[in-house]
Length: 158
Image 1 (cartoon, rainbow, N blue to C red):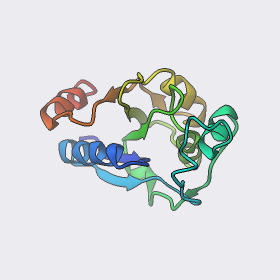
Image 2 (image 1 turned 30 degrees about the vertical axis):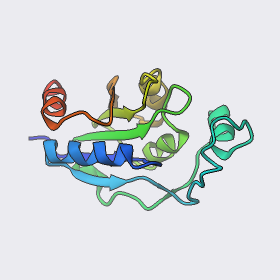
Image 3 (image 1 turned 90 degrees about the vertical axis):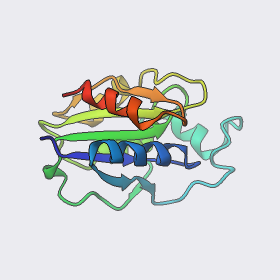
Image 4 (image 1 turned 180 degrees about the horizontal axis):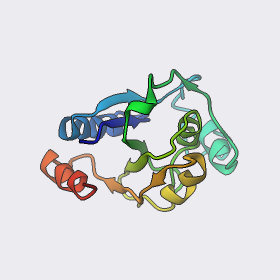
């Protein structure tokens, strides 16, 4: 049986709730990806081209620092990585998170939340940061998805 990690970045609590449901479904361990420098409401204003999130997302080499690390990443076979969609992809802090570890032989499965945006190029954008891992396409979910639907999705990887 695969041992799962559900690592997530959440700014409004929506991705956190989805990650908690996913942990219930998989029996996996939860890990919150926290920025070393927390985002303020102004930082997250996507309509302001000078906001921190806008500047980070324009610069694909941006790697916001993550506070804390997963203990013993080697114990996990599958790593579900959750995030809100920013500019049709994963926030660059997800790249930072993945690049901290040796992911050789692991399966990385992105999951995202968004009111309307698709998961887009997230998997393609994350692959270079997850060296040696198999990065699956992943899925975008609404905040209201039930555990039964999530279970069906998770079972599709078995």
